[in-house]
Length: 286
Image (tube, rainbow, N blue to C red; front, side, top):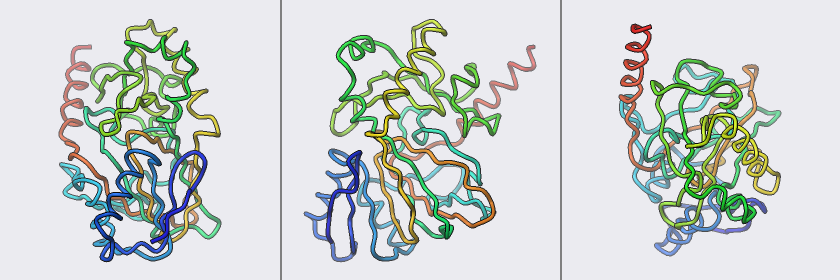
């Protein structure tokens, strides 16, 4: 395999990687790159079957089965009946950031890529945290961010949560420090993202919203962002804690299908049913 820098924002390019020929030192180097230094790997130069994709993903942690779906290999697609997300845009987020332990990493493989091209954007929240001015770091000390999933409206995927409106306690949510510690490296991560952050606590709503927008202005600067131009057979693996991702609307005219294998502790979909019951109970009372 050959490894080189992918972009100034993050990532390494890994060319012609064969998982069956990789040595222990190869795997160690890739794990360190993913979780400690570069936070994103692009494997390019050869196709990877479903089995090889799972084999590679499993080298970075347990395959994250999604309880309630019966699958650990799924598809992000605008054409497949079993595909998720469809054609709509997705604003900046990490997967399952509204659960106590989000996936440690995610992987996507280019199955069908439109001839005109398609992109996924990535933002380095570790680098953004490291570059915060000292006065902002002091201001964030002791503050917590509330991450919430809008499971009742499709606009929640594409919107900026604080501009759409704060959600109540009947939606899946989790609260963690605005500067939360990376599970492996210990580095601080700037833990606010467009799709799911609706409050910084214990600030009052207006002050909270102003601060979140200030942090967005800092986090989504060009120097922290890598825009991936997909090619067929690309395999992208990224640190789901350190790196946020987003995409524009992809339309429906041309097929766009990415194979997805998550890495980390299983995510329990039964929690969605729990919060749905809470919402039903609240609606019954009103």
